[in-house]
Image 1: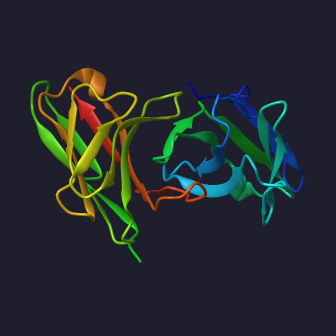
Image 2 (image 1 turned 30 degrees about the vertical axis):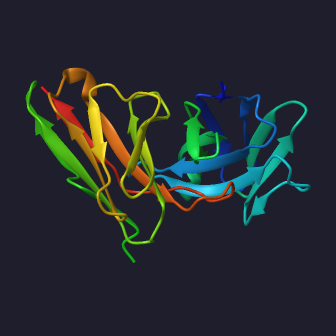
Length: 114
Length: 113
């Protein structure tokens, strides 16, 4: 069965610095997808970035990038040049099966300090 | 530019009451999902649908029923609400395909007294 582990319940980062949020996963599927979502205090879930298991390059979207290490089963999110608005919960998720179901980790609460 | 709309946003129920949460999407997505989010937890899948007229159980389906009579709507029902169902409920939708992100509604905060 698929599983996502986010080992950092909370993280602090100074504004304008980079931060890495950890995500490890467990799956027996040969092909899978990994997603990161942001949940601000207002509660909505915002899609950030996607990494496919067969993608040749690490995914990037603006200030977000994935440090994808398939052999280690890790897909860490890197946020560059942190902003105060980046303060939020961040969830890593893995796709289960072919019908798009997601298994979420418990999340990491990121706080950006001015 | 509505995306995924959930109704209601907040609701308080008494134990044993029933209610239906409505999810509507205007993106013509095939797939729709209902999740619940409890404190300190990520989202857990309750039920999902891969097309009009079809539904399937997710990770935590007990105590809930769903229907998808129209492609754009996905209803989540609680027949006899229990305090353990106090949670924030999220609806999501997407198109088939491995790289298609799910688009979420703003959530429904449900309290069962």
